[in-house]
Length: 325
Image (tube, rainbow, N blue to C red):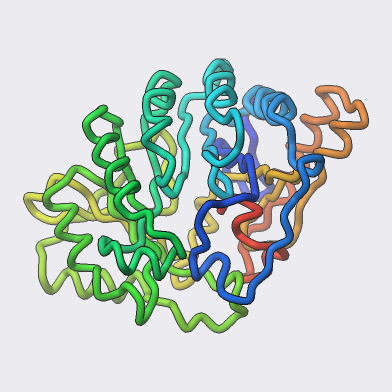
């Protein structure tokens, strides 16, 4: 079976947030003075509920699952959940997004579960600046986890860098040089002002970064992301002679809605057809009220059919950490 929205896009990718909690307080996600109410345990989907939804979504045509948070590794028994998730027949790609602080402990479990791609958030290569951006002095835990993952032979290690004007944009060259030395995917991501209103004073455009790098390196365009079965929004380039790859995700200056292939399941049990929209569909209440499999499938199909053609920036209705990005 195949999930196709009203605009002909094939929906094959489900992002699953397992928690709204995070062990960091990044300035662009939870800035000073920005309070995010914590969900109670009763509000958050139980693992068995998530597994049931995923199994039904896979039957409908979902092939890629990404586990997100908050920070997924702060949730108790996440290792057992990952093991059960990996047993679901029909999942062709299982991936995870993490800030990397707790990652080292779970690398073996992820490897056994068949996870081949890791997305690790790291906005700076300087330990002192890391503390300023995240509120925690945990840089070396993340750096160690990245290199341990490399030793263990994960197919793709993607380092996600949110560029912030006046804060870390001066590190573009350092990250580019890292892609020359190491076989990592360095992905520059435009800041989305979800917590700070419509005016994005932090924005560094992907186009400007590419122009900056083209003046210093010979860049070749890669037509597809070889690290995944399902192409995403990143555009990839390679510096001549580099071991790694540079990627650009430009949600603010270059919309990629026409190629969006995903929906999201939030930690509190809502399906979101579009990240940058307040629209969501409650799947937890019917689930807990005794809905049968066909009822749950109908809600998944509904979410796909209500996916908009284009998003409107910043009409998200909730904090990014409660959705899973």
